[in-house]
Image 1: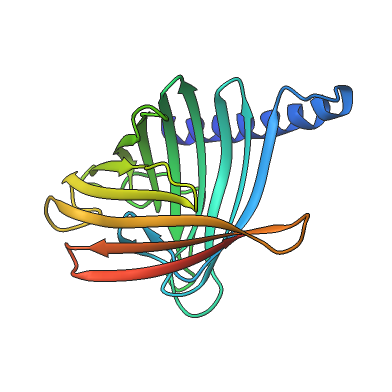
Image 2: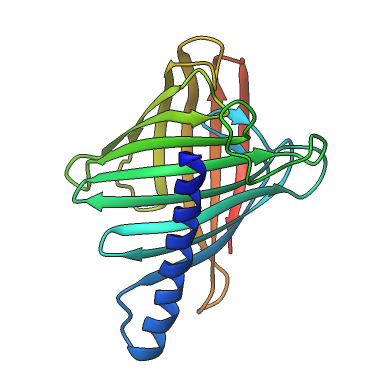
Length: 235
């Protein structure tokens, strides 16, 4: 019951946050709250080396930011064929080079039915996770993330660690990453590297006023002996 009350409070904060954004936009030409909305189209949805989409997916994202705080929602829905569907909510706070976040991942599918408001530990399809991200910035081109499941559909309470190398190159944005499951069974049956690869992002100029952001990700999961090359477009 405490978890359910907490989630309801999170939804209330979410609605108030976006309501304040709209009011601020009407009363000030330079709003204190910034809102970002975008849609990604990907050839396949992979999350930390896990194949969840089973085909092309559409991934909408809506977030509001104010003084280092961010709150928002992210989702992934398959466009063809079978696959898991996902609707997530998050809240985060950035302090200099440190970002703390709490995520509510809700993964479901049409075949098994779904109940978003079921937060009972033994039956819920929600997974609640706390994470910390350390960013090296321009002087140190490395990022480190640790993410721990503390409630919900992963009873093993998995711990995921990821190191990212972000070199500065002129032709595109490049991230090289290595993800390791240190505890639990969410990503693999045993502790193992589950997410190795790189992502390249580049905006292609279509007209003088319009560019199309493209991405390519090579993702290798040694734990399940699989590899994927995923293409994406951001609208």
